[in-house]
Length: 97
Image 1 (cartoon, rainbow, N blue to C red):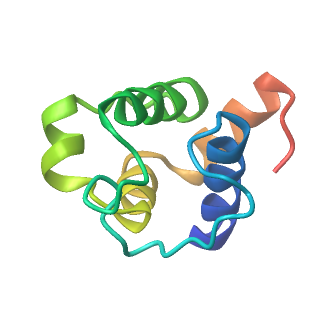
Image 2: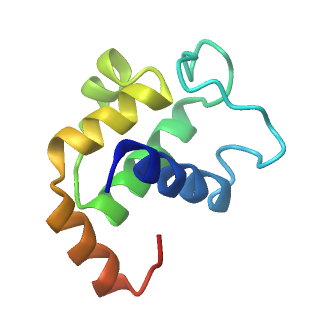
């Protein structure tokens, strides 16, 4: 899996959980909090999405300090998750990418 496939999967999860509207134009470099795209509840939902779908726990201080944009989040997930682990997680959950 490359970063583009990860991006598509992650954005689909964000759409599904109502964090981002599918009709909204997404700038993956934009600061999520400063832009108003998400608030503190949105951060908690993103933490939950990442934990449940990628089996990666992101502490809130890391989220606030380092994961400011969608690109930051994607690179954090990619860094902490091997392709093999991702494939295993998806097949165990029955999700398709």
